[in-house]
Length: 173
Image (tube, rainbow, N blue to C red; front, side, top):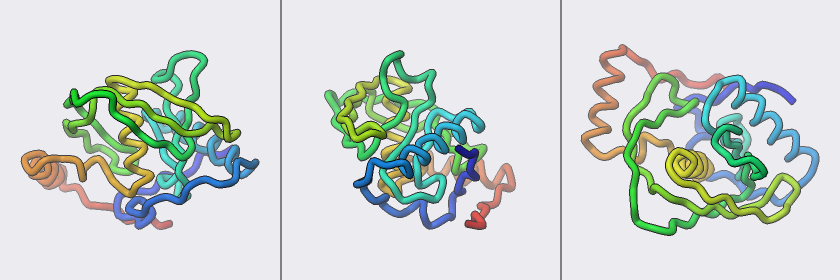
């Protein structure tokens, strides 16, 4: 188990659709533990395998967001939205450090997938948990939260970047 460097915006792995997990083996269990440890170290809400440079459809969620007795990870998630209601609130990403912008997401989500052992599991989320599940699933599809911004918020992103004299760092990976 290792705290692993997080890939930053500009790294091609963040824009690729991750491969489905087919082997529920020791390698997958190690990946989930690495994701957990890295997430805890960085104090984020969630972390997807592509952010560690691994093209697999798996992510972890911060323990404080999940109810006791439920899983803190999903393998091969598939999302369903039980309603049309949306939420709009601040969102950031460990792969885009220092940028937080209001982003629209669905308020409620039902995520079906597997545990690290291959057992079927379902996670029902609302509010922040729903936002996190959608954000991490986007990572598995090569989508970053900034892609979800409307035109006005994309302009705000450019303004924030200019004001901070930010430069996009290319990951050395």
